[in-house]
Amino acid sequence: MGKKANAPVYVLGVGMTKFIKPRGKVDYSELGFEAGIKAMLDAQINYDDVDQGVACYCYGDSTCGQRVFYQFGMTSIPIYNVNNNCSTGSTGLNLARNMIGHGGADCMLVVGFEKMFPGSLQSFFQDRENPMGQTAKMMKETRGITNAPSAAQMFGNAGREYMERCALPPYYSTLQLANEEHRFGAKAEDFAEIARVNHEHSQRNPYSQFQNVYTLEQVMKSKTIHEPLTMLQCCPTSDGGAAAVLVSQEFLDARPHLKDQAVLIAGQCLATDAPSLFDRSSMNLMGFEMTQFAAKTAMAEAGVSPKDIKVCELHDCFSANEMITLDALGLCEPGKAHEMVRNGDITYGGQVVVNPSGGLISKGHPLGASGIAQCAELTWHLRGWANTRLVKGTNAALQHNLGLGGAVVCTVYKRADGKANEAVPSEVVAKKTGLGYNPAVEAKGFTAKQADMVRSKKKRSDYALADTEKKVEARF
Image (cartoon, rainbow, N blue to C red; front, side):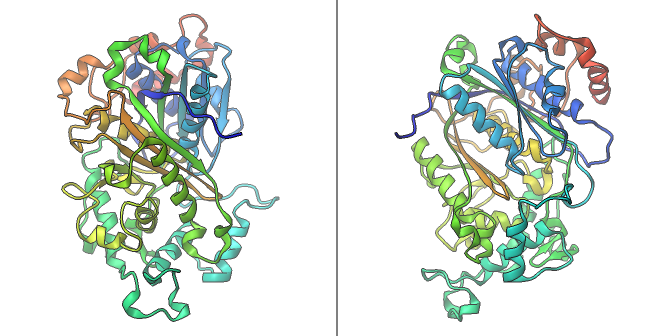
C-alpha cells in the first residue's frame, strides 16, 4: 500500500523567546510557557481548542512536556515528548502535521524548549553505547581524532571534503589523485563568508542571541576550532523556547478572519540516513544524502523546485554544514555552493536569502526549539510581517533542520491564499494579532490578562502554574 496524502495542515500561530546564553537563570518551564502563550495569542485560540500537544527537547527528564503543558491547562489531552537530536523541533512539527493531516486532530500545539549547559555538546550516559559511536568510529578511521569538540570535527571534516572533491562524477577525493582543474574550488574564506553573512543578518532579528556584525577578516582570524572552522563559524549553545499552533482545513475554515495569517505546510519530509552514512565520505557522514532525499521529497509534494525558493532557513550549526547543504538542497549546481556564496547569492539582492534570522550561528541553537524557531521565521516572512528583514515577493519558503544520529526534516511553506507576500505595516499587525504588537520585529512579552485569555477556561490548575507566569512577566 502506498502512503496516503496529507490533508492540508496550516501553521496558524507562532511564538518564541529570545535565545540567551545558557547560564541557568531561566528554567525550561518558563521558556516553554512563554513560547506557548505567545503562539496561542498569535493564533487567537484558547488551550481548550488544542486536541493534542507535542513537547520537543533533548536535555531533560522524560515528562518535561507535561510540566510545561500543564501550565496552560490540564485537559487530559495526549502529550508527546519528542527527542531527535538537533532536528527535535521539526520532528515535533512533522508529528503534528501527520496527526492532523490524517484526521487524528484539528488543532495541535507544538512547544520546543531547551535549558542547556555552557560549552560544546556532551553525552551524559557513560554506561551504555553512544548512538553516535559508529559515526565517531568512522570519522576516526577516515580523518583521525583531534582535541576539538566532536561536532566541530565532524562538520569541519565535511567542509574539508567539499574543498577536496572534484566536479567529475563519481566524486573523487584528492586522496584518489583527482586532477586539480576538476576540484570544486572552495577555499577557507568561502566558509568564513557564510558566517559573516549570517552574523550580518542577525542584527535585524530581535530574538538572536548575538547581534554582532563582523568583517570577513575578523571571522577568519577568530580562534581556530577545527579547520576550516573558526569560532565565529560555530553556533553557540543556548537556552530558549519556540512554539507553533498547527490546524486543519476545517479548523481554519471556521475562522475565516485568520486565513491571511495562516501558512500552509505544502510539503514536508522527515528522513533518516541511507547506507552511504558509512561509505567513508565525511559529507555523507553528516547526512548529505538524507538531506538530498528529504529536500527532493518535500519540494515534489509542494510542487516547487529550488528555483522557486526565495527564502530559506537552513541548519547552519557550522558554516561548513551550510556550504554542503546549499548543494544538497539543490539551491546550486553540484559543487558550486562556494560560487553561490562568492556571488552574494545567499543574502539580500541575490538568488535566495539564506538564514535571514541570523541562523544558528548567530541566533543560537537551543536544540528542541531551533526547528520551531525556523518555522516562526518563515511564517513571519510569508505573512509579510518580518519588516526589518523581509524577503519581498516570497510565495514559497524552505526549511532544513538536521540532527546527527540521524534525522533531517525539510519543509516547504506557502501562504494559504497562494499569493506572494507583501509587507504589512507593524501598526496593522499590532491590531491583527492577539499580542498587540508585531512579534516578528519586537521580542516583547505579554500581560497577565493576555495569558489568562489563552489558558484553559475549563480545566486549569494554578498549582501547576506555580510562580512561572510571574517569573516570565518579570523578565519583560
